[in-house]
Amino acid sequence: MLSLIPVREYLLVVATSALVTYLVTGVVRVVARRLGAVTAIRDRDVHQLPTPRMGGVAVFIGVAAAFAVAYQLPELRQAFGNNTEIVGVLVAGAVICFVGVLDDRFDLDSLTKLAGQILAAGVLVFFGVQWTQIWLPIGGSSDGGGFGTAVSLDQTQGLLVTVLITVVLTNAMNFIDGLDGLLAGVALISTVGMFVFSIHQYGDSLNPEATQSPLIAAALFGACLGFLPHNFYPARIFMGDSGSMFIGLAMSAAVISTSGKLDYSTFGPRSTIALLAPLIVMLAVVFIPMLDFLMAVVRRTRKGKHPFTADKQHLHHRMLNIGHTHRQAVLVFYLWAAVLGGSAVSLAFMTWQWALVPTVIGLLVASTASVWPRIRARRLSERRAGVTA
Picture 1 (tube, one colour):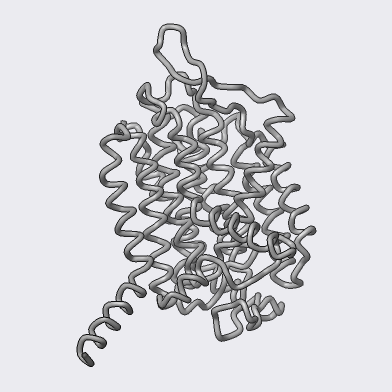
Picture 2: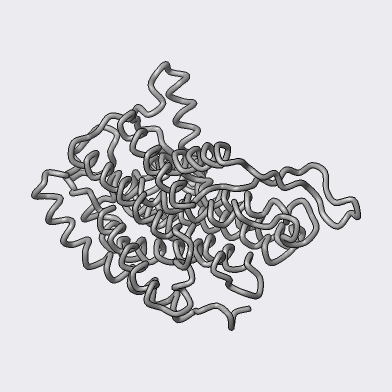
């Protein structure tokens, strides 16, 4: 199968996206300062100096440049063919990025941003990026060769599911963007999982219908890679809502393009876990931002506040509170993203029994790393108590 994958073309896409994003970010930083798109010091923030935002503009330009290069390549050009999904990602991305730029500069209210997100999701659907079927773990073939049932969605149902996934994922990515380099790194790791999974699912031939998702993942990976040197602690520029919302939209497009179009009747080994792999992968790669998002909504609703009201109780804030440094907290989140994404993607290559042991080991390592400052503090306290005794 590897020989059928245009490796050099994908590498060129990644390199183009990374280089363009890296170079354009410097320009965007200067423009953001002149426009006044600078993050002031607020109580809920962890940075200590006013920092320009709008970094998402550079990420969008990097992805657009990667798509332009892909269009010139013989194999990856198939992604464009009679399919308009890539164009849809660009148009919807431009819409959501523009809304994000306005928010980075003028701090839009949550309803206005939500309207922009719904509009961008609608643009995706208009260009053919739409969830078309859902696998349910009930029923199966009469000969016992399969398990579960694939339910096709009509136009309205597909529209609603697509908009819901896009809006939730866009806001989830926005919620996680609280530490220098956190969103860019988690998105980078997640896109690796998406790329590997989407490439594998299309079997022994990369037909035109199979190339949209890996191309989106490769372009987004390169953009995050190019942006990360500017954004890792201490950051010289922030993603801003222009970046977090665009990354969320692009990732949702890749997820929908992959998971919403798989032939569940022929997918993988005949087991429940294997058949659920597309959903598991989707949940795993967005687990951290989704968990943070859901916890924030519940926390704020219980306090009688608007669910999108800002506070200082996100997961990254909690990591700092238990004793992690800024960089350590970010690296721990990277570890969680790698463990969850890698474990889910492994289901495409092996049975769940074989994947279970390394998954458990990875979870134990990530859990230990998360609470290590408290373990270390307790050990030091016990040693001091022993000395004084």
